[in-house]
Image 1: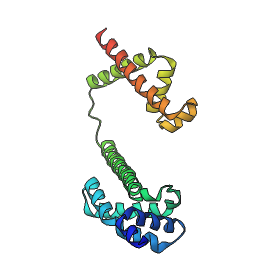
Image 2: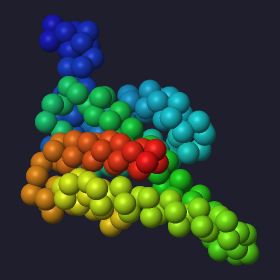
Image 3: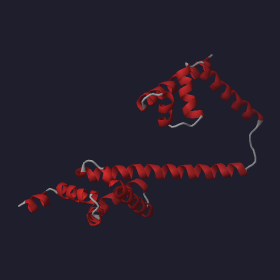
Image 4: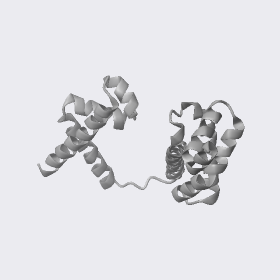
Length: 191
């Protein structure tokens, strides 16, 4: 009777396999891979739109899941946990691809001759000066927040540690500081 109940509710079977995999049972993890690989591949293909890259992404998801399965607190949430890992890895891949593209473009720009004109240089200098003036008109907290993020390239977590504030507070400060800077730049442009 309990076997029948288990098969009627697939989440229970998966949770049982997850607990076994967490205890070190490689065959149980292999069964989880077999059960979830098709749906995970479909989700990966929707995200990356490339068959080979989707296969690589799914493999990367399962490798990470195998390494971190002990951290999963709710075994019945295994499918959702896999999709979360997939989403994060897909975002990371897209960012790396974008960074690589930008780097390649920057390398190409470095090989090209400088095509800027004196007028363009004057406009760029004026825009930079306007930005400096706008930053100078902000409060210390707003200016320090924007400088940390945009000029020093600090992450939200690094800023949280530097300012000794929660991540949510840093995000709010950054949002508010951007709005205030935009208002200052607008008032400078109309003056």
